[in-house]
Image 1: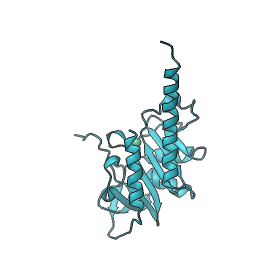
Image 2: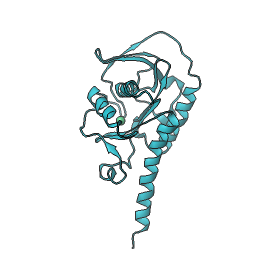
Image 3: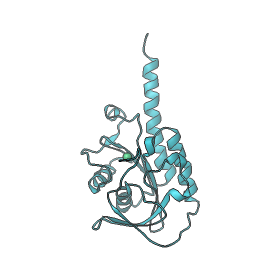
Length: 202
Ligand SMILES: [Zn+2]
């Protein structure tokens, strides 16, 4: 039986002993995750957020409600070994199922320091073109290396990318910027639908 909202991971996690200081990054992640949740962008415990941190990244744990996130739901990922499909972490929970994608993005883009993935119900196939939103060409299952590569490729053209039939990914030089890309697209689509409704004659 699969629990509602449970998202399985397609890689192994090795927990390492160690300690680290969040340096207030946990507060920042929690703050922005609440914003995304309040806007309805992380339904059914979906969505994940990461920031570049020391030699790796901090990422939200898998299957967490981003609206109720606390420091214990943030995992320090020190490495992701694509040969062994294994990630090495410090933390008490499994990292997000999209950890390979986040890791690959930081590897490929030096100027990216934050990655946000949400499921915005307003972002639909039919309005992508209208709002100039970049979409991946091929569809791959969540959490796979293939999907990660497809997203990394698409990010060359845009800092906001829709994964075909899945959800949105944005990147930024900091978390505020990555979140702002997500909120900006959401606002634009929302305002547009409001305008077209108001323009209708009854
Ligand atoms: Zn997703």
